[in-house]
Length: 398
Ligand code: ADP
Ligand code: MG
View 1 (cartoon, rainbow, N blue to C red):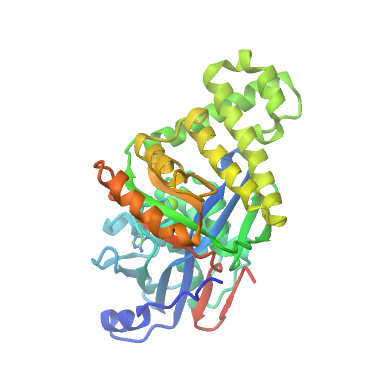
View 2: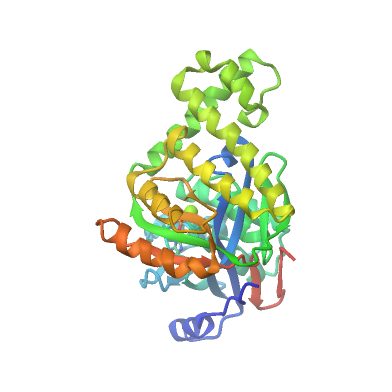
């Protein structure tokens, strides 16, 4: 069972800062992707869980057309006009909030301004999607304050569009879908083309999902992400010219990639090989979970890492070393990098009793070798976003 996410004193912090009670408190979780990496923008499959770690937003309405936001993670309060975010040059982190507010207004939600206090225990910028947690909690809080109700998918799509338009991050749909739709003690299998999803119960028994933050984030991540998107598009375009009916790499199998490897060239063939094999692994991983076959699930996770390292080339020395160290702890069933790569986190399937041994190995090897420092956390597959205080108390994933 996942422990209930306990609410930090966000209501009290709102009252202290703004001198009045808030009207609403919303919560949205971070996520970790178990398998299905770099498949979302290729119309493929992903399999994330939501974390207990969440972002809480307390909100109170204003009627003067202004937005005011304070985050415990940033400390400095920011204000801006609702209709012109850039005018007052607020700090970049407010782009997530301003984007959501603007898109809600564009959709006809009668928001006239708002004060917001933000508290989070999702590591910021660590690959566990603090950005989607902030967007989703904000969107829920703002729509509730304005008396509007959005359908879950509408909420997730609006948040993703806000990240594209106001922050300039061309993310896939996984982060926002996981934060909105997840269910406790389940993984969420998402078909990114059909925008369909399925809750897969996680019966982990004596095993836990362990997340280890490598403590590194290489600057080239954003540039390489865009480059990989281009390479995948290029591979799909070429395969479409050879085989009608290929809309994206999702429509291609491993045999087709090998048949056309010469035409694709070394780089595009390797990228296509990762995407096609990763889609197959993700489907197989969901199937393994359905029949409670954790050993197969673990093997698929480890195979995903090898593919991300060798074919997709998005790993780095630190992640490879961390994967090696954790994978060598007896009993660990699988381990891989998770997220876009070049830093961030790894995810592993570990016997509960071996967690101290993993922590020890990471400290004595990874940290002692001068990497990191790494931080280890046990992931409790948690519920999706909800309004925890206010009019519409409830959870989308249920
Ligand atoms: P990730 O989503 O993996 O944590 P991103 O780079 O996508 O990493 O998003 C991190 C950014 O999101 C931060 O730099 C900040 O601008 C914003 N952010 C996320 N959570 C918060 C928060 N609690 N308070 C303020 N800004 C936040
Ligand atoms: Mg993010």
